Every structure is written in C-alpha cells, then in structure tokens.
Amino acid sequence: MKALDVVTFGEAMVLFIAEQVGELHQVEKFTRNLAGAETNVAIGLARLGYRVGWVSKVGNDPFGRYIREKIQSENVDITRVGIDDRYPTGFQLKSKVVSGDPEIHYFRKGSAASKISVNDFDTEYFTSARHMHMTGIPPALSDTAREFAEHALSVMKSAKRTISFDPNLRPQLWASQDEMIRVLNALAVQADWVLPGIAEGQILTGYSDPRDIAAFYLDRGVKLVAVKLGPKGAYYRTATEEMVVPGFPVKEVIDTVGAGDGFAVGLISGILDGISIPVAVSRGNAIGALAVMSPGDMDGLPTRDQLTRFINECRNDTKE
Image 1 (cartoon, rainbow, N blue to C red):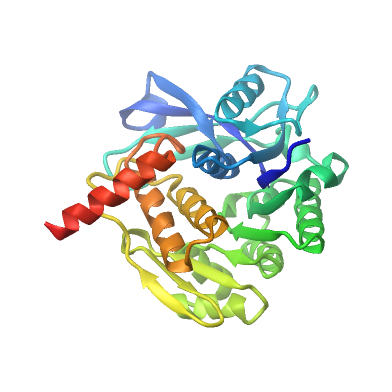
Image 2 (cartoon, rainbow, N blue to C red; image 1 turned 90 degrees about the horizontal axis):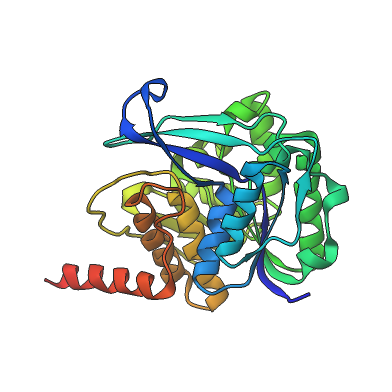
C-alpha cells in the first residue's frame, strides 16, 4: 500500500444542478455532477498533486458507481470505499441562481454512507497519511458515523498526524442546535487547524468577532484557527501571530457552494508545502475565489498551473 499525503472521509452524493433559473419543481432539465464537502477537498488536493485517499460507503447502484468512477478519475484513491447492497447512494437537487446561495434539497436519509461504522475503519490505511481532513458532516449522519469520526480523530492524534477540521454546519441533520454545538466543538478542539466560516464561528462559540472565535479554540489547544470572511478574505490566528489576509477579486459569483472547501484545499496544501501561514491562507482565499466562479461544487478547483496563473493575473491587475 502506497503512503498517502492526506486522508479524508464522508458522504458523497450525486448532484443534479438545474439548467434554468427558477423553482426546482418547475425545472425540466438538470446536469449531473458530484457533491460532497470531503470529496471536494480530496479532489482539490489531488489536482494539486497530492496523494489523497477518500473513505466512505456507496450503494450498489448506478449513483454509487458514478461516484466511484468520478472520484477515481480525479486520481483520488477509493480502495477503502465500501459498496453496500442494502442501502442506496444519496443525491441532491440544486437550483440555478443569478446571485446568492442556491436552493438545495437533499435525499440522503438512510444512505449507505450514513451506515459507515468503526468496523469499516482501517488503521493502517489512515495512519499511512501524514494529514487527515475532517468536517462536521459525518458526525451528523448517524450514531455509527459519529463513532467512526471520533475513532478516526483519536487514532490520528495518537499517531501524531496533523488534523484539520471544517465545521461545515448542517443544522437540519441534527436533533438540536445545542447537540450540534456540543458534539462539533468536542471534535474541533482536538484538531490542529480549525476552519470555521464567520457565521459558523458565531454559532459554535457565541462570539461575533473573528479574534474571539479564534481565541475560543486556541485556549482549548488548537494550534491554528482560520476564520473565513467571504469576499473580505480570512482572519487567522496562532499563539504567536494573527492577520486578516485579503480575498481575491471575483469577476462574477456563479455559485457559492464549495468555496469553503476550496479554502481548505489552499490552506492544507500550503501548510503541507511548508510555506508561511499568511501565504497558505492567501492560497485558500484564491481557490475559494475560483470556486465561486464556477457552477459545480468542485468545477473551479484548480491545478497548480491554473492556481499560479490566477494569482499572478490578480497581482498584475492590482499593479495596473
């Protein structure tokens, strides 16, 4: 088994994007694509040249086969993706919008991915990676998926691997907001890098100032907190430094879904590359900007050359 740079886990769904603006029930045609916060990050890192593994379950159905083939075509390892004969693969519908956030409807209850359990955990596979990225979505899917997430976190911490945590709040999947806050904060404080959006940080910590949100996690042992500020960029803080890193200009916002995952790709890749934190955060901002200028959740995730070209073009535009 080849060693990995990054391992992640979660649910992937087939995404049907409306081809026309309007109410979803009125749309006649949809374009098929892939959706999943963790697969967005896995694919984004693979496009930058990293060896990435994604762990999950899919149904033994056409949707499951599509997901496996799609992710494998992006050079992400799927050898630990199980095929479940009993439960289906989830899917979702997303509206087309002129501006703002699209309408999304999920069909994921009882999905194969939600049935993942500690019995599916491969310690050797996970610890072959030097970094694990996780989100707050798997713990919301089911009790067994939550146990899987907690176990993965414990194993990787014991193995002294770095861990990034993006809350990716999905309130509709939780029994209550209080439970969501309690469970996700318990996971977040065990990670090395925590990456909340400003609104997520307010919900999870009760603070509205990015500096206070960061302090909440730093005081509990987290090494780096990067708070995403949308078009304004991102604020980061460690025990010794802090800064607001400005965002990149966006010509046209097509779809905001996936921007946070793009930010994670940039930050994780930057730190793994050994560049400074401000430059890594700036890379995250750049990939987030590229993500919002494309319709699919992962369509805007760049290769190394595309990323370099975008950053250089923005620098040249600023000089003019």
